[in-house]
Image 1 (spheres, helix red, strand yellow):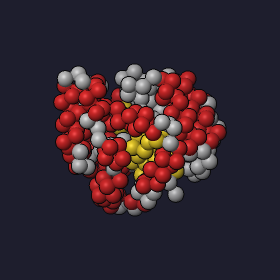
Image 2 (tube, rainbow, N blue to C red; image 1 turned 180 degrees about the horizontal axis):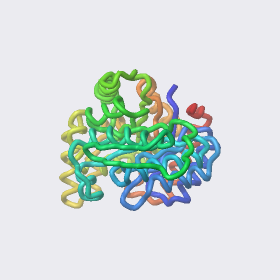
Image 3 (cartoon, rainbow, N blue to C red; image 1 turned 135 degrees about the vertical axis):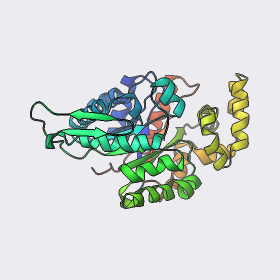
Image 4 (tube, rainbow, N blue to C red; image 1 turned 30 degrees about the horizontal axis):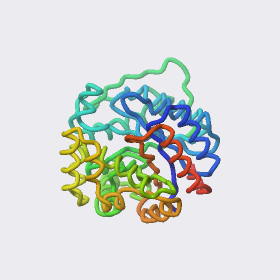
Length: 341
């Protein structure tokens, strides 16, 4: 069964908590906290946890490169304890440039880095069993606890983000789930994502069925269908303006449109960026329109995703409109059964 979650962007933490409470009351399966240079996913997740009682709460994503493994492991333990076992640790690297320029870290071999990080975080969750010693390519830890440490109440799920096949394989090799990108089409999921998960899982003698497939799905709801489609078009243009995603857009058949968007971006032509997003791109990359339109559009992910995270567009939108659209999406998908723990 396809379950539904929500990731709001472009709003303050108090509004994120308000929307999390509304999603909890409506019976959605999860709410997810984003992270950027001005927003902490773990602190946002704590606010969401404090406003909810039943719904799953995850980070989508917390930058693994921006925290030491020890800090990351401790934050996740605290969040899972605070939530009563409802937390999912979603990790990502960001782009290579973000790794080097934002976090001052080595951007080489990001998939290998993430696999090492996931393994090390799990070791640190077992520090109650004895000293933790790790000498890896990216991380070195020598930890001897000085007092008694309780075992975690459960094995906290870790999902890793991936766009290209090798990074997607990482989820299959090491994680409990994948966090897919907003630019994934159903064709990309079936032709690239699922085979990569299969390869990664078999590489470490795991079953692909043990890996939850979750992905962001761009969504906007409004009785004014044209407005909803303009809003998702703007968000598509925002991502397509980044050269990082050019290979993905080429693979899914939108290379020419992406080039036009980047050219408009280079001219500082925001209206031209959005105008370059075609109806075919909107239909392939988003679900937008009335409540019925959005519900019908999401059905195309059934059998491909385990969990669809509705990504509320925020580019060129006011926080008030983001909140309104998020509440509309919550209403549209009310009464979805929560994911079991």
